[in-house]
Image: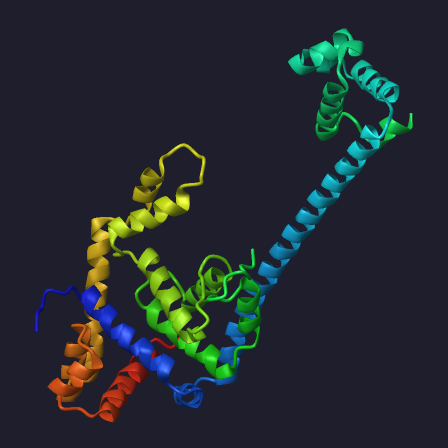
Length: 150
Length: 192
């Protein structure tokens, strides 16, 4: 037998064996051991159950929070998709009216290079350019449902 | 999030369900494991260890379906102790902390933060003394029983049940009986 192990290693080996002994023991045997040690098994078990209940509750709350967040994201996406569909179904003149209205309400957009052309002369925009710009503006939140009602 | 696509492991929802229906005997076994392993930690209550193992099962640790919950908790507690123990292997501990800290975005590097959490040499020596004292206390309790003392010696050196049974001429029943005696003594001594 070698003696190269530290006391830490030796204790670890012993505790591993004791752990296996706990795992292999029958539940009745363990309950009886608590009684013999003067402890109330049900009370000890309940204290652990209470700890687990708190952790499980926290886990479920986090999961619910994540589900709510995902639902909000989906709703937002669906709303955005609906708005784009409505926008794309408009005729060319109506689309340019919406764009003109948004650009006049948001002069800061003029600094965006992709919109410089739109500011300069909307009539030079192709239909696909126009759709692309409107789509970007919906995603950036510049166009909302109320902009299509006016 | 629930990992339901992994057929070999329980999903987190399933873990939560299993934790909710543990029997009294199972909860007591987990408490015993907590008491046993918490002896290697200073400043932590056994219930801290049980709670942390529960948290890890509900978050990061994968639970293979074929493994009983007691074995799963044993593995989780052993891993926690390896990270929290004052004399945990510094290099391994540094790697663990590096991984844990990798996503942080504050000033110091992960390794600097890990090093800051590393035990000091005197703390490690102190811990080693405590482990020695713990072993001596167990051996001292069985000082009049040569077979148990031999058993502890061989077990602590990492020999398998079969090797110890052969060396000490023990039947499997005698082997289990000695292990139970040691277990009962250690847990009685650790009673909260």
